[in-house]
Length: 331
Image (cartoon, rainbow, N blue to C red; front, side):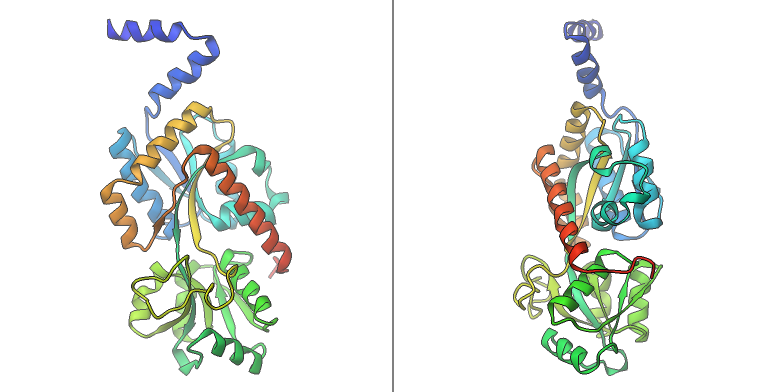
């Protein structure tokens, strides 16, 4: 009888409302595929798996993580955007794949990113260090010393990036421009942040922007030296490290975010249901604890509308950066 009553209630709605409301009430009724544009073990993958466990607790359906690395996230974006817009194929991407890639590689996309992709919510962001190696007794211990050394030894400082056109690449190139057109040499590493760190430990490169979570052990061991932190405030664990803002570079460096995205044609009631589930999941006490252990800041949006404003602002910001700093993408 209860089931019959629900059917009759739905039948009372106009046909268009019937489809969306009833679909919304059932969502999610099966596991949700989440495409991650990186290999397992990286920050984006970690966030997806932590969030998936939390979503399972809230909704009874978790995430099936599909790692699809490569090509700056282009394959992952394409697969998600072209999937049935039913809320069961999403993408968990970051600032590189979902803000920079759509600008730099728009001609390589077969979709219109602005029209075919919608942000569900920002999730977390990750503080970063402007980091130097201590290998080979690399001398700078402060940002002013680094700038002075770079001016005295033009072209001698090599810096690592996780790929040509990635946000760490733009961060260092923009820093060099803002610090007086320093002559620095970029050395991309296809093995991601882990590869960049190994290059630094060997002394093959001298500097990089690296996230705090992946470098804490090496900092404590004295193998890497943070000169500044890219964050809104000081990090309690590193009270003596100044922020880039304090050093006069408020717009340099990226607090790298991780966000959740869906096909733009997904019905709004489904997006609203998904947003509410994720908003609750990310605030579960054990989820907060797991994310904080990774030095992730929870920065979920307040609403779907807020998420759209956030993504538009990010795209505008990176449009400015990519125009301000010319990088040869064929490197």
